[in-house]
Length: 412
Picture (cartoon, rainbow, N blue to C red):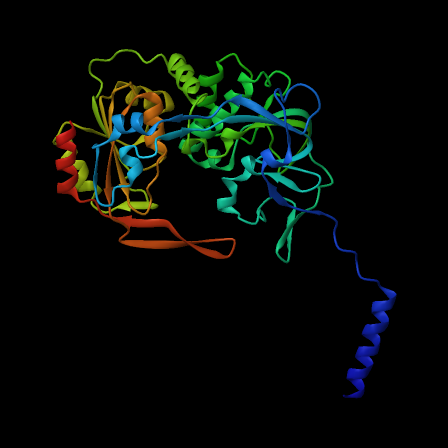
């Protein structure tokens, strides 16, 4: 070892004794917890002390026999799942209302968590797809395998609030309509909104329009929290925030009734009776022969609709007036909530992206749902999230067009 190296080492050790290492920043490790296992179950969560959970709507099951009577024999294509024919019936989720005190809220993620770092799952289940470790939440850092939250020096303080916006609702029409709005209405049905005014992140115009239809033009809109986190002295949230679309039930029916009443769709004898909900141009799930499908449907009297070009009120009217709807799987299918009972809905599902949620909404509303399943994908694109590749986020697929048209023509 050279003289210079020894000298540098001695100087470094001396400086270390003169300038102590800075203490690590304080914080609390975040852990996702189940509300039902963490909070005390009571009959009325708005009475008595907080940190409780209680019922708003009891769970219900549409039996196997009844579901089969509505669905059996109405599906086609390749590898048709048993549930498409009604096997197993359909669950309609229970709805609970949680009331908690002294919590933090990250409005852009939906997250509600307390000073012990307990993150309530119903508020983040959707966000966990984006950030499985919750490291994308503001004021967090990773320490090994743990995500640590450090309280900010300044944050808005709100005495009481209703949280209803999950992360998926910020970006996805279906999640906002089928998860977030029932969560808000459940809080209202429980009698919470007057004492716990609703809060939300900044809203997009279409979200504000749906809220106005649901709550009424004269009702107060949610208080916007335009900050990374806020401190809520006391908060309530309802469990439909957590993927209610997978097993929808009341109060989604009340969401439908209110919005349709407010939209007041007028009779229009010239309105299209057959519509195709196009995804042409989408880069997420590319149906490579969609242009051919559209041409074949136009020849059968279908109007080709791109929902993003329509206002919310016009979308509601379009679906409500239609007698037949054809569409590939996607968020725009949430609009079947506004269809008349008996409307025929033909959903086209790629086999690596199948989902039961549209079927369940159809069963709730009384829509005549039919499904055609196509093998997929032709190719997949892996998406990087939190440094890891995740498959099946984007893909290309092809519809057996002759097979689907035969299936469609037989059902019209």
